[in-house]
Length: 216
Length: 216
DNA sequence: GCCATAAGTCTACAGGCGTATACATAATCG
DNA sequence: CGATTATGTATACGCCTGTAGACTTATGGC
Image 1 (tube, chains in turn orange, yellow, red, brown):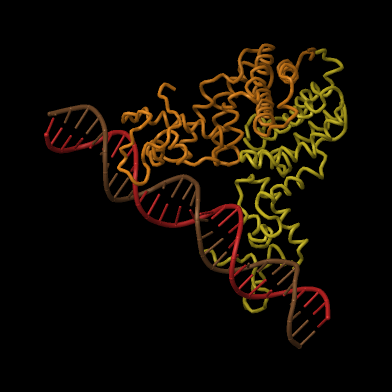
Image 2 (cartoon, each protein chain N blue to C red):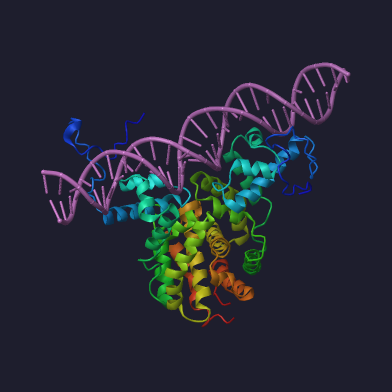
């Protein structure tokens, strides 16, 4: 995120003027690659905040400092842009780290921390939750998740039916994101974070070492 | 193109067509209460299938056999209609039955059964999942859930922090609905239902009787 | 300096959205 | 039977959507 794309007001596609626009933010020099990246970054954030159907290409483009048509020029369509955004959102990060018992604990703590009321509230799960109401977006998200996180998580989980247990683990993660950050139920929002993390960890543990005794 | 809105053909025998045209919705006698109920039922189904933002008032009205304006006449606005639909969707049913260990088992089995690929795939959780991307809908859903299911579930759960644990339980339920029915990950769709139910039950159990065995 | 061309913008279209106003029809009641 | 009123429809408005084609501007090579 080197290029500071602050939320500047439109660099003069404004109606009247020939756009002298002593742009407060230095207008980016014409650079296809950089513009593409700016659009993509704007898309990831916008899709995460409002969901696939909840944001228009004009808003995404404006936040990237360009006009809507560049989206179609660089990505083909809004849907194609969404595919790229899903890839960006899911690819880089390791959703859950560690393995075995460490995995359960670290994931629970990270989950509770990242869904805190004062946190950034960004990330791939939020993008998923707010986009899957559109069937085409849901299919894109499914493919992205299976490709990027589910397989990797299943490997680190190991054991029988690793893929099924990985998806179950992701279900709980998504559910907590949903109830805590999207729906915003009070009981979860106001819960003590340490205690909440321990409870989530216990549920994770039931999956991680399901064969052995589930002694906490 | 498509010849006229044949949803309601003139009641008179005039059309002369020998085709009986078995109207999908037999023209109902003018009855405000019945019409209101028809709209509401149509809304619950439509909001469940496509989410709050994913369906228009014209479609909801058409499925109820009326025109869109009746929605505004009887409910005031699309948003008010959604409030009523949320109430209808969440109110009557007991989301999870039983108490204690029975609760964990019964809920897990019901959840897995209702999210099966060949099931109806209706119900309040689907309505929630597909609607919360809209912030106003999310707030309505939050209120409806807390009013109807969370409180009742917390009472049946008992124990410390019942409300928090109830919401956590609902998180897992919602997450499984999400991954299995909305996103449609293969690992969960193809999973053996008995085994899957047992795993979900184990996660529920970590919440239900956490005070007893698992020292915290 | 000029110019070909990449990079970006403008205008427009066809359609959907929620909803307000005006109108038409069927049912009830004196 | 005729009039009144609840019930439902038709039309339209203003706004927004994704996208296509034509147009403008900056940039690098000569």
